[in-house]
Amino acid sequence: MPEFPTIFSITEDELNLDELLAQITLTSTGAACFFTGMVRGATQRDGLPPETEYLEYEAYTPMAEAKMGQVADEIRQRWPTVEGIAIVQRIGRLYPQTPTVLIACTAAHRDTGVFEAARYGIDRLKEIVPVWKKEIGPDGGTWIEGGYTPQPGE
Image (cartoon, rainbow, N blue to C red; front, side, top):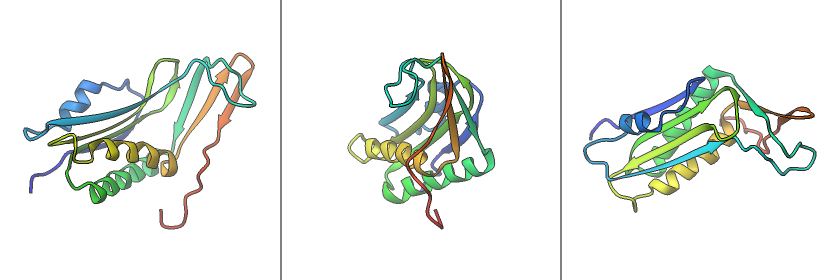
């Protein structure tokens, strides 16, 4: 069985999609699925300013990267046909139209779960990876709360 590449990291650096794709692509790869989250310049939520000047992302990096590794392991258990996995979260001050997070999965074929694996990756990251964001608008800032509380053992 070949060694499948797995990348997970918290970074302040700009996300380079081509570079990350190259790192998770094998000679057998025929499909890649990316999810990239972006900073919105307008957010329509109750109690928040509709205009976003920037987001401030923070993370507890050692725990966040360990949890990203857990997400990658879960993807591999559910979709053993996935070859490469990249899970990368940016932190720091990020402005509208800037990529904030990347989940990418590669596989030999598109119909082997690569779409589902990438979707699972972002959903699970939002659930268990300790990353926090503060939305800054013209009237100040608001911490954005997630709706999930990890259970013991997660």
